[in-house]
Length: 258
Image 1 (spheres, one colour):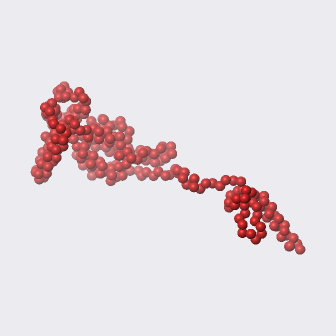
Image 2 (cartoon, one colour; image 1 turned 60 degrees about the vertical axis):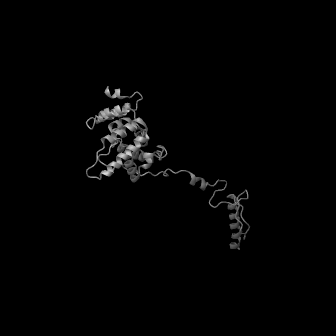
Image 3 (tube, one colour; image 1 turned 120 degrees about the vertical axis):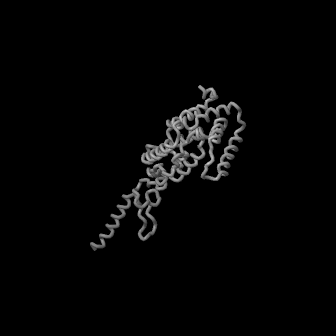
C-alpha cells in the first residue's frame, strides 16, 4: 500500500512543478506539446515569459573582423633605372604604363585608382592602419620615380591616388604645352645604331601624327621651342622650371628671356 500511495504523490508533485513553471501539462498518454499560459507551444530551454533571441538578426550584424587587408610593400627592382617622370622628357605614357603594370602585379591597383576606401579608424582600427601603411608605401614609391618639379607639385597631397591624379593632369594636358613637349622630343630623338633604322623612323612618324592632331604651330610657339631646346641636357632644373611655368596664361618667350 505504501508503494501505491507514493504514485499519486509523485504525479501531484510533477503537476505542481509544471504549473509553477508556467506550463500546462498534457493529459496522460497524450503526444500533445505542452503549452505556456497563452496556449502557444513552449520553447525548449526558453524560460517562461521571456523573449527568445533573434538568430537571423544577429547574423546580419556586422562583425569587427569583416574587413581583411594584407600588408604590402611597393618595391620592385625590375623598374627601369633611368625611368623618372619628367615634363621635360614628355614621358608620361611610358612611366604610366610601368606604374600600372607594377601596381597590378603587386596588388596596389585599388590604392592607385582610389577604389578601396580607407576603413574607419574606430570600427576597424587594424584594417585602417594597414590601409594607411600600404598607401604610404605606394606614395613613397611614386615620389622616388618623378622629377623634382613634379614632387614639389604633389608632395602635400594626402594619398597615393590624389598624387597620381594630379600627375596625370600635369602630364596629359593637350594643347600648345603638350605639343611643344612632343616637338622637342622629336628634335632630341636620335637613331640607335644598334637597332633597325626603320624602328626609329616609326617612332618619329608616330610622334608627328600626335603633334599634327593637336593643330597648327605658330611662329611664337616655334620661338619658345627654340629657346627651350637650347638648354639641352646641361640645365635640366632650369628647363623643368620653365616647362612648369608654361601653365601660366601670361607665359611667353619673354618669360624665358627674363
